[in-house]
Image 1 (cartoon, chains in turn brown, red):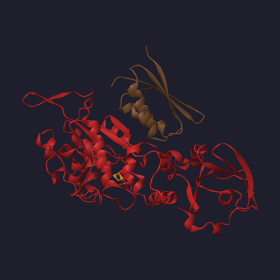
Image 2 (tube, protein in one colour):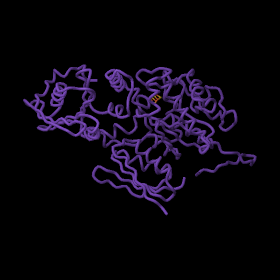
Image 3 (cartoon, rainbow over the protein chains, first blue to last red):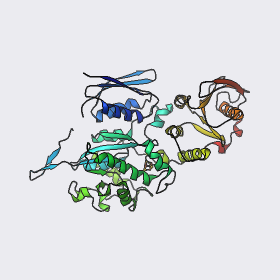
Image 4 (cartoon, rainbow over the protein chains, first blue to last red):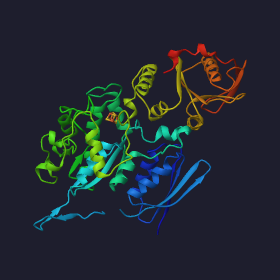
Length: 77
Length: 362
Ligand code: SF4
């Protein structure tokens, strides 16, 4: 059974959203998804890069108004 | 775990693959140091510390005019080049004590580089030796003589000793100028394949980068953080002086990176946004600060920091008007919003340019 979690990183500047995402994923089980809400445009590059190097899967990236919403699937590392 | 846990030696006896954690700042030196060790068959992972003063991210993210510039985080970029994991650790709270009370003092500005290095190696060590991580040694990109204060031959053993890492701290780029460390003595790495860089010249690093095929690496002019910046340090010193005590919150040091800081009187200052990106960023602080924005004309959002009375607010409003589209008008209407949500408007004459004193600019 996989669970959905949400992490609000609005108004945080990089690298804080990356750090919060990293720490939140640590607590999740394999297969769980984490939705991360960001406002710093820097996250558009940083969060996918962090996921690539740490072998986590970004399922989607949406930009709505001033928000950037990532959906990340926790993979075992 | 993506890499094999053991490697075969020539006599076929399996030998444990050693693990090193590399301090990754995002600059060229840490990239090269990690690469040199990786090339020797050691499993390397990166660690990066967030102090609150890091140059990475922030200002590019805030300022709209920089939007077209690449906004990559260099530490992440380095990790990707190396194909290693990167652990980013928020030390901003604990770091305050380093900035406020550096045992070894400051560099040219408010940069406590030596204490900072000791602290980071100490934190890296605490993380690396933790049972679930199980690393064998730590590597940094330090080079003797590269920085006048923190990277000298005499400071190298101080960092090793005071951080507690002792001889499990290896500097691959200048190891040959230093006593052999444990990883060298134990044969986990081959000392002959380490380097003897020293001095301020960057040439050997550039050559090594070329050999490894790295280009497009970051070359920050100062150090790895805002504390080496004279203007930034002046703003921080001003903040301490105005408050009558040396302390800061994370929001304070973020705001020092944004806008024009104008202190017309010792008791308060204005933080005036310079463009749209900063405007948006400052908006996020309206619940913590009294703010002023112009109504009759286009203009910057301004936060007031400190303690101020009605006359001070009027003075501030005149300065704000001076930076608005109505600077030549007889009067500009501004709205003052208190952090608790109450607000009122007033008409003020913009302050003439020559009355905004040079020394008010922090
Ligand atoms: S430049 Fe900043 S981050 Fe780098 S060692 Fe000095 S104080 Fe630390």
